[in-house]
Length: 253
Image (cartoon, rainbow, N blue to C red; front, side, top):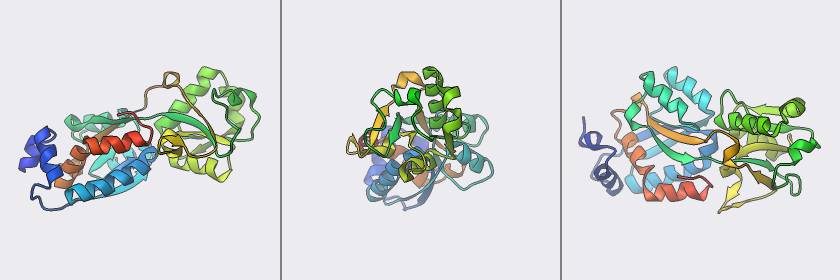
């Protein structure tokens, strides 16, 4: 076991990682929930510049990534869209349970690419004056499950059922809305926020009290146990630099 692995994830390890520490550069493959795709790519670039290690990002729905990990996919780190999937992997012996931590707290938003479609309280859902509403598959994507919670709280589940279009992931859900195949959809705030503002269209940022918390946890997978770059990436994710990037996409940390 290397010196870094013995002390990770303490502060000393973080300082060693960020300074380069003379470590041989390695590569890490990071499985990333679709809602966190853009921040993950930005963090991966900054991580490489800071440490010399390379991080390759593979994006998918949390449910699909879980299945791939269980089937032997060569991922070393998982950035999940929930806290339950990493915990499950830890309990099943597929990941290092003690390494799990919350790297971001997500926000759900009802968004339309067009201005004036979605009001700032989500009353448009009660009106039903639209053809299709997109959401991620609630069985695979925590953001989809959150959308189901919101519709149930508003009492519109039954009336909206014929209008629902499901994406496999929150990424595909966003594409449904962006392409115009759905008039609006429940997506991640990070997908439509640029420099602290919603870039285009109209939106309702859903109060976090209307659904289960979107705590997004990271965990070191078994394939990353002896990978210096994997340990370094987990440490970098907790750095001030990474946290600032995460906040810039509308997440809490």
